[in-house]
Image (tube, rainbow, N blue to C red; front, side, top):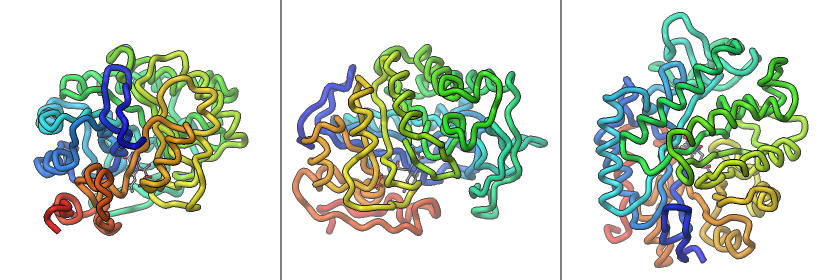
Length: 362
Ligand SMILES: Cc1cc2nc3c(=O)[nH]c(=O)nc-3n(C[C@H](O)[C@H](O)[C@H](O)COP(=O)(O)O)c2cc1C
């Protein structure tokens, strides 16, 4: 089933394998994508397959990691254009992931005089990445009500720029404890205005941002990524099952390209328990009516089972795509996989990035 075609709305995919969004920190210090990134994505582009890019920062105020790419100015658009052209030349579909880090930031990265922001001021223990490497996030503050509208506009502008840059669609990063997720979960959202409190209020930010992206892109070109019950980045909820069931239900009002779920067994970049079947996708499948992508430490065999069981339509692979530029060909042919090297995930230049061998070179 992994190699059966799938109609994802406007796109005909030739197989069910998706490249998961993977932050690799190879942009320049002004958040501009580089030629090296073009090579990396071009290496991984496969005819008829979907690539979701690493998170791209929607404004300078959204930064949290030095060398993560941005999508908020024309210089960045021009370089992304080269990447989308290279990927399209190989016949891949490519979505840009839109990212606001929320609390996981540091004053060295932010506009002068500003602090990391979230729905509420909390004691936060995440790490940001500055020129001094990984450092504790700076103290944060709660967003004022009127600032939230501005952030939604930043998402809208970023998604317009993504269109100019030639992407096929955008994915909202609503997972892993970043801004959208902070709003969703009651452990990190203690607001008392219309963006906090009830399920309806905590979901409002996600839905308003999603609407802004759809205003720009129309139907079938916007995806949303969530990590139900994920605790990465210090987020937690008193009743995650009710929360994410509600969110999935509310997302039915849009004609999304897909809902992308990270399984709870994944904690950021680490797997907590091996061998579990997808629980989030299995639960939300009955609630969410559109296409589902699932991710989280899956092997090719797991992916086949997930598709057989009907829990998802597509399976995203992260770390195996880091180490195997030709992952899809390897899986198709049953070839062995290169092992990934964690040390070069978010550090370095071409080593551990574009120098993983293709199978035929071995
Ligand atoms: C180095 C690294 C960077 C990641 N960056 C992102 C990111 O930018 N956006 C995101 O939604 N998830 C990110 N993730 C999570 C992956 O998309 C994926 O959900 C996770 O790696 C589980 O899939 P896997 O077991 O196939 O690697 C990252 C994971 C890794 C290992």
